[in-house]
Amino acid sequence: MRKLVVIEFLSLDGVYQAPGHPDEDREGGFEHGGWQRPYFDEVLGAIAAEGMAQTDAHLFGRKTYEGMAAYWPTAPADDPFAKHLNAVEKFVASRTLTTLEWQNAFLLEGDLADAVRGLKERPGKNIAVLGSGNLVRSLIANDLVDELSLSIFPITLGGGKRLFPDDGALRTWRLTNSNATSTGGLVLTYEPSR
Image (cartoon, rainbow, N blue to C red; front, side, top):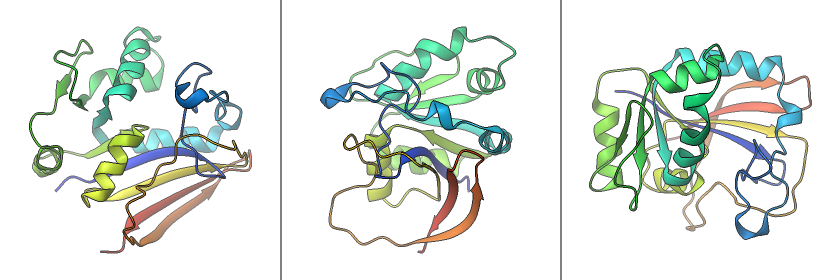
């Protein structure tokens, strides 16, 4: 069975919102978009390359899909992230989208948990989730996440969207790997303690 891997950039105070670009997600009056960019280094690049080699599909929520689809199809062809993201299958969880323009992108149909279980049962490599906080909370609540890859950076944002469900459920995770970055970040890999 394929692994579902959630990949997130987090501030020390647990915010995942808008790490890449100032206008990525201003919802709730968030003013710190692009906060993660100064922390990208060769360590993160190597970890990302390794992750891409192990991944042949991505799962996105609607908002993340729309942001990615607006940029990556027209990114320079020699960009390794563009090359990967444009080539692999992309599955999108949305209640409002009816069509997808990005090549190799498909809408999930029916119940989210059932659709994701079906994806995991298909042959292939890992399925990665980038961003997509609302989706991630649903995946965690439905016990569908096989691995968390959390890159935590030495910045506090004082507010913004938090990653984990606020549902009162106790969940335990086991640390399976850790790497320090040259910019003071940590990349921590966890698996559920099932």
